[in-house]
Image 1 (cartoon, rainbow, N blue to C red):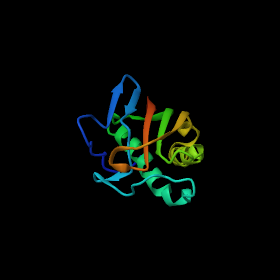
Image 2 (image 1 turned 45 degrees about the vertical axis):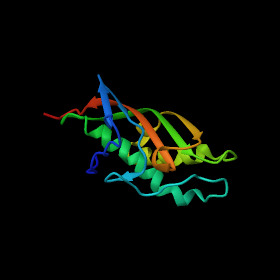
Image 3 (image 1 turned 60 degrees about the vertical axis):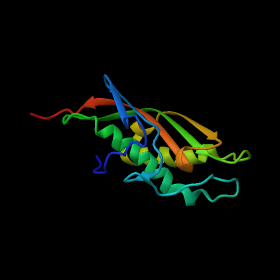
Image 4 (image 1 turned 90 degrees about the vertical axis):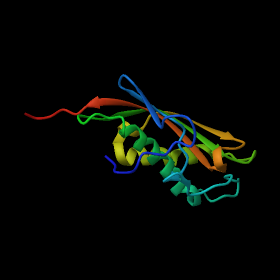
Length: 147
């Protein structure tokens, strides 16, 4: 699906863990080669478009980490659950709009299978002062081959 490098852990954990046909990712921030591309709180008067590249990169990192655990004859079947943590000020109310950007990214790549359950949660801070962190659970299926 993608040829993006697997995210670099920023601590003692793995980017993703597989149990049966489910893959659980760690929380992914908008890091490229281990470096945050954006930092800071998402404020009430903030234009969401300004943080869109960071949201999409965090979402991309979750899929990249998941794909590293696929066998050759497998693909991501469906997004099961997504949790979006948003580094916000106390009066921020557009959590769902932030999560929608990540959901739209998954739908672009996976179609309707990219839509799962989700939670969008405002938090006081995130690692490295990242604006967003996304955690994903996906299911895996075998790719049917025609013989």
